[in-house]
Amino acid sequence: MTERPTYLFAGGGTGGHLTCALAVADALADLQADPRVLFLCTDKSIDGRFLDPTPWGRIVQPIRPLPRNPLHLGGFTVRWLGSLRLARRVLRDVKPAAVLGLGGYAAGPAVRVAAGGVRTAMLNPDAVPGKANRYLARRVDAIFTQFEATAGHFAEALRAKVRCVGCPVRREILGADRDAAIGRFGLDASRRTLAVMGGSLGAASVNDAVAAAAAPLAKVARGWQILHVAGPGKTAALETAYRQAGLAAAVVEFCDRMGDVYAAADLLIGRAGANTVAELTATGTPGVLMPYPFHADDHQVLNAADMAAAGAARVVRDAADAAVNAGRLVEALTPILADPPALAAMAAAAASLARTDAAGAVARWLAGLA
Image (tube, rainbow, N blue to C red):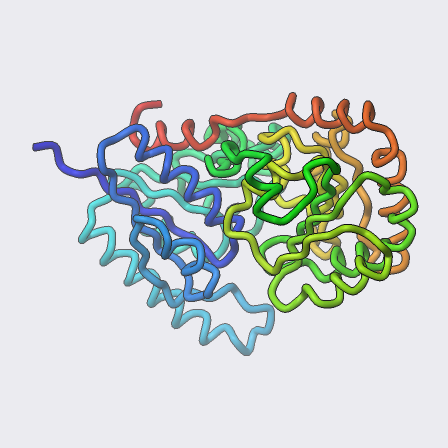
């Protein structure tokens, strides 16, 4: 009898890392009968929220991010060494066919331990690799990216490892039904839908900007309705703003079936995280993107660059000021909301950028089939 293959996925702590990984895990299940996928993750609650409903196992690491304050280095070192010991024990016990680093600090211990002895790869769907991925790049056999330009951010000697395949997108994003989604959120099928999304925890500046823009938007958004995924504890103020502006809106804290949001959306306001950009193009959804403004490398601006250049998205720089952001949003949205042909052209441009086999490409490499 053929031994059941095991794959170790290392990372977590953010929904972005985990959604990519779950897409790859599903693709592995398409390739092989009953693969075993085991996550070495963090103790953050979001990891359990994403992983517990799946058939995949998880082991919690004590790892924490590298602290900025040197006084906290001792605690970090203790947790790093504990995570290294855990990774060695797990690799010895499960003997994985391959290891996949999901990006970020939580990928470090397992990738470092596995490198050189087990086929090892990492995901880097953001345009610019972070510190952890730059550190791990020299240890892995393959680096999977979403953007062609990302290779230039690695040392020249490492660029041969880079495989630009796109960003793995969960199949639930691709297969949702519009009518069912409209019904689920209590929306009006005769109206177009402007979706607003600030990530799994809700982006305060996105929420505040849209709330401040509600009244002026009501004047130009005739025939439109709002679907707003607000984040935990953030619905009340938005519901009040929409009601006072006279805008039809459905506001939810969290959506565990994001495919329904994209199925309902004709246009989406959101950050420019790697997953959001990939999901917008995979579903042919145009965007008005507000890149997170506090990353030192400004990588979300670069994530949005291809969509903006293709005419699939408008980029609104986040000024971290609700009134300024509201004015910028209204200026960007007005010509789109009132012009159906322009909206359709943006949607076609978004669809032209889609790369929907990224999860399959990564899975085939992990399984030794690429």
